[in-house]
Amino acid sequence: MIYIYLVLAAVLIPIIDRFSGFLHNANSWWVCPLSLLGLFVLLVVLHFAFVVSAILLVNTKKPAERFSKFYRTIINATLPMFFKISGVKIHAEGLELVPEDTRFLFVCNHIDNFDPVVIMSLLPKAELGFIGKKEIYEKMPIVAKAMHKLYGLPIDRENNREAVKTIVKAVNIIKEDKASIGIFPEGYASQSGELLPMRNGAFKIAYKANVPIVVSVISGTKPLRYNIFRRRSDVYFKVLHIISAEELEKINSTELGDMVSEIMQKGINSITDIKN
Image (cartoon, rainbow, N blue to C red; front, top):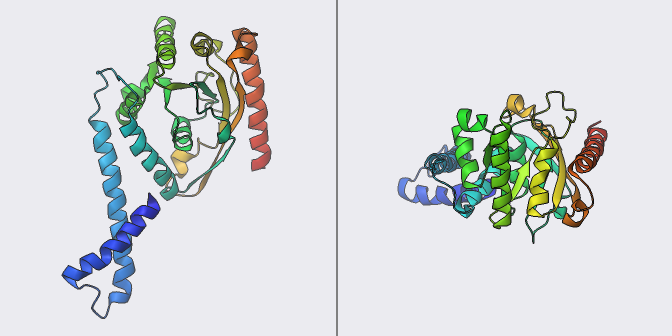
């Protein structure tokens, strides 16, 4: 979208000049590039204003009947532009492994609230809803409204009965072919960046929905909250392995948790080697 808005700004300049003649003066050599920049900034601001306005109209109390292609489209157009202008460079590998012909359970380690945002930007074609902590719905209403339209589900991590209800909803979303589901099986964001123990109950989604598991890792999102718009930040993301539904039939949830943890740890180590 950045390049589209740059081109659009360049197209608008001669149109505006036709009516105002602002380029036909002695100072036009600096007026033209300044006008280009100003028009570009205006278009970007209008874009974000439109996106925020559209999201604010979402009623989270009304059940999402289907995955909203409209909201997915505007998010696809917005996130890459946001990361570009805010100085975030995302290094991604293994995206081609993500299934395109079947629903799946997407699992990743958890570092920061930016994790699902980065993942959504990298998988624009995936109809993917994330399970997120219920506090998001209480403290981040704009994010919560966007999640709601994309089959995001809040989970109460301290209430097992309510957590089970969320798991059941996630299973039904997959079974009804509405969307794939993304989870962070550690349950909490790691403050140190080290991998936390898996909460194996989350894997029941894959067992009950009979779908493969996409295992991935992410690194570098925690500094974004301090560096964004201030200095360049590098985020690393890897899709590591696909565990097929047939493989799941041969192992229990504890064994699966150990397998996922081992795969993730190796992935984190490989990213650490790259960064060093």
